[in-house]
Amino acid sequence: MLDIQHILRKLPHRYPFLLVDRVLELEKGVRIKALKNISINEPFFPGHFPARPVMPGVLMLEALAQAAALLSFESLDSDPDENMVVYFAGIDNARFKRPVGPGDQLILEATIDRQRSGIYRYKTRATVDGAVAVEADLMCTMRIAV
Image 1 (cartoon, rainbow, N blue to C red):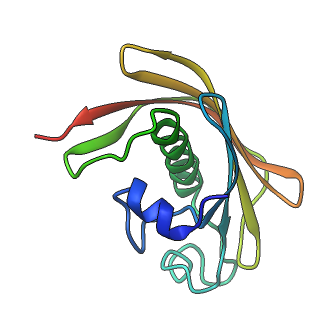
Image 2: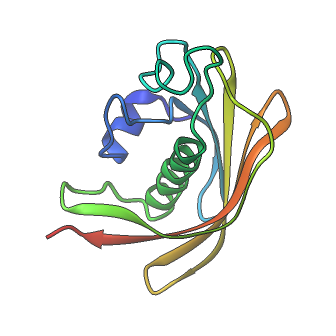
């Protein structure tokens, strides 16, 4: 639904920290489904871990947060300017269910649970081949960077 060029216009992240490759489904104000292709060439694999490459859990949470930010920007029908930043405000109930490694396709899902006073709460989960890899409740806020 949204290709990498559209994602690059919405998110300030760039390689190696852009963790969303494509948006598959988007229902404005409600939910998003996106994907991240996990390649052996990811910059974190040589150190995490050389004998058994595993995507760090914090980066899976970051990928979910990036998908959630895309949902928020699309829902607002706005393009962020260079001064707008989406920050984590909280992470609750994070659970890691399976390792993610080279060759996996991480499907990122976020649903807006609540939005009030510029703070968004999302229910999120990421799956590989239909099995949950991670789930968490994320809180983010959009702010003007100073």
